Image 1 (cartoon, rainbow, N blue to C red):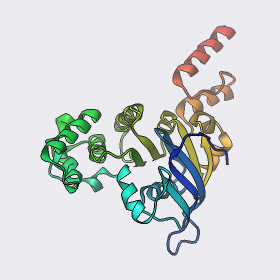
Image 2: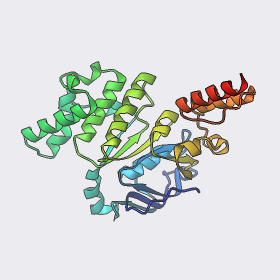
Image 3: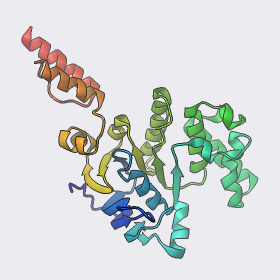
Amino acid sequence: MKEFTNKGSPVLELRGVSCRRPGAPAPAISGVTLRVERGEWLCLAGRNGSGKSTLIRLMAGLLSPSEGDIFVGGERFAGEDGDRLRSRIGVLFSEPDDQFIGQTVADDIAFGLENLCLSREEMDGRIDRVAGMLGIGRLLGRHPSTLSGGQKQLAALAAVLAMEPDILLLDEPGSMLDDRSREMLRSAVARLHATGRYTIVQATHDPEDMLAAGRLAMMSGGRLLAAGRPEALLADEKLAAECRLETPFVLAFCREMARLGFGIGDHLDERKAVEALWAYASRTS
């Protein structure tokens, strides 16, 4: 397996982790070793059933490995230590409605904070802060059912952020959204990453998410096949086919142009593809 290396201390580390569900004919996760560095944005990619959502749940402590160990900040994520370390981790799932329990967005964000026995002043400060970070201040008084899909996901993310985790685990958060809402959520995640405060691990099918992240880990059949720069891995046709990943639109366009006899090279960035197309036109005109 091709692996990204970094000499810093990983904030999350999996060592030989496997996970077998009761009665399942094969492990959902098999022998995964992976380091996630502090402040990194890592995307997990693969077809349905590849194991990426199971891996998110293992990282969150919602499942326990049948083999191997998971470490958070260098400490083993198990037993009493696991309960303490879990407070560092926030999880956002694909269906935001499953995470709503309040009558308003503000109530929903406050629910977890009430369990921390915070003062009303501290709770209000956190609610205003995360709403400002995500641009949803105007939604605080609304019932979650009145929100659009993208607004619901941002509200659910706000409730996660209010608990002040430093590790965000996102399990296909855009899979139930339309293109506009997915872009809105992707922009919000990019802003969070840019603060340097959060380590983000995101399971996704969306090539745009993968390209926005700093690193990509590609999975198939519960195994980690490769990890590295998204541009390099998504351009690997054999690897993308094994993981059954959709070819990014710009790259697919470049390859179709090559098939038609217009060799502009492989590009994943739209601007570079346009520049290559103009350069090709100027050479042949």
